[in-house]
Length: 361
Image (cartoon, rainbow, N blue to C red; front, side, top):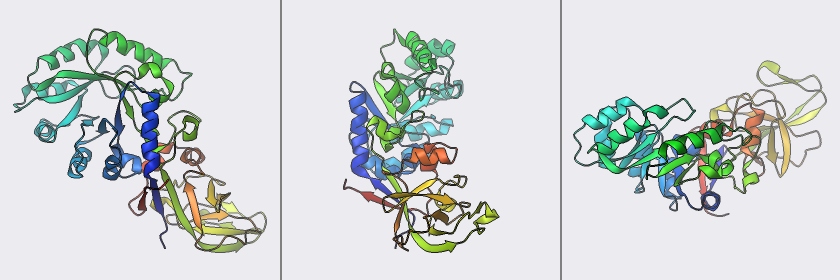
């Protein structure tokens, strides 16, 4: 009997990609697969996204894994390269690189490459993480255009820190700053992440970078995927491994965090922080057993969680399936109960969890 399992719904994944294309019909789609495709399985997910126009990852090892898996689509390194010795690897594997600082530009200018590479010039319009300053744009752009190691088309991009909040006008400020910089450049433009796709149609331009929404999860504040007609791709599930009677005054779990106020029955489920479930999920965080929600009690331990199923829950038995998040329990809700974000929960699923890739709806 399999216990902790991540069930990956491939039709839902493809549906979500189609939904991105529906929302941004004039844009090409860069499917973001960094961090093991947000915990869903890097190569397998890429193999199922044949309708994407390109893939985006954070680092070279992720890109190399895609090539080793037989993927031939364009791959963009969102963090760029980290050493001049990486450039021959980029060229040999037809990787495209983001350029976001002077050291990268110098490395490209000073390299002796057999053929030019594709470059995405990243401008910092307010994220203050990666990217050149707007006042550096003209210099960087001209140097890249004149460099024989760079293909003639220099793609241009930026990143949004606040696009998840449509009431915050800072994203519009960024769009305006970027548009003013590139107004006379006939290059491909990429601004919108998943939140930009959903909340800021003026930012769609030539390319959109879809990450979280591909997996059926909302990138917007206080919303869930279904609010945008998305379908959750991951269903994290496990099994009941014990039924336990507890009485008034009994304490449950490490540290005795939860004390029984009335006699009840606990279902012990095979899931814990060793599987990636958030250790700080608060009392009452829901799980679903046989279509009904029940709240967790006590501390989340490495391998197990206790769930209060009530004194009359005789219909729950050892071996019953438990949904920790998925179609009937949005991962966004579980993340809120653990004071974190759904990105972290998805990315933190550990190698101990079995993966099942399902091609049926």
